[in-house]
Image (cartoon, rainbow, N blue to C red):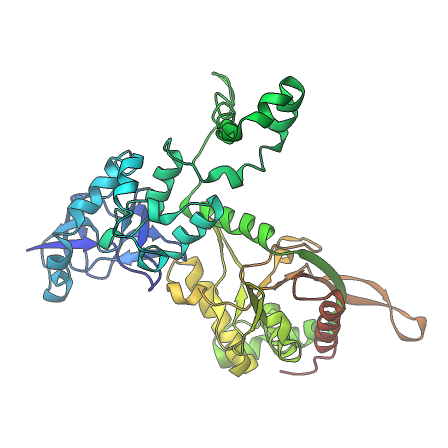
Length: 449
């Protein structure tokens, strides 16, 4: 009994995914719920289990290819189940038209197709697209009404945007022309009158970029070129967007965490035996940050146009470094959790992040982020804000060093440097420093669990 394996929808706002790795080869046996392949989406990397037991007979979507959700990516032959094959009838008629556009990218490129799509499109509300597509449209100043969608229900996909940008019909990219500012000096001294005389000279600003990548490395160069992974591409886009969006400012505080270090050493064994998880410094920090955010709600907000949106839920994201990139699982409603609850949730999220078991909703809706480069020895850093949040806390390494304490005495203390990157559009320097001072006081005066 044949069973179709489909690209799952890993969240309401996710409409496509990239197959990053097949864990089984054609001809190999696979058990039901055994990891079959890995995917990468806008939100998370994840292992996808097999919907049924059997033999992998066909791989229809190779590694590195992006397809729509519900697209058939492989076929199994063997012990299929009713529940596993149920979605197949719904997806079988759909994949053929979906799989063709990716195979022939030039199809949506001609401007003629885009114009044919204009009549049925009466406004942005009628255009079906993902948040990623809308972000790219804003970034490159593209009118989505002029693009023919090739996805489910004529949904516009990331591939459609990329095809449109690479085609000769890109006419709205002029606003993105400021980057080629260095090109203007040659125009002025060479022919000042013509530069002013032709308003259509903007397309010429687009012509220089193609020559730039021509043979950046001559033949025989000792270099290795590798394409970015889907996750690296997303991180790249997210970081550049954040720097372009927020007015980044940093403030740095030194904190004496000797009490916490001693408490952790004293309670570590008993805490792990009682609760089943290790007692980590990050748990202390996450709890302290949560309690301090209650006092300074502006740092738990976001910006929408000219409005400040204050979040009642405190969802603390913890950046986790992986061998293949970076991911930020979120402790949801941290304000309702005890210290033990925060520690358990943190341990669970970190473990599942490293084994690609996270769900899309577990990396969404964060309101404040903590990143800890100190585990690698860094004294402190100035992290980039995780949009649409307005602040992120960087944690340096905990080091023992001589410090002047009360009565001018010198003692060996455990010290850590905390740095806060905040969005100066809505957070003033005084408020940011008050937040850090309160956090410092809370950490330095921690007495018990």
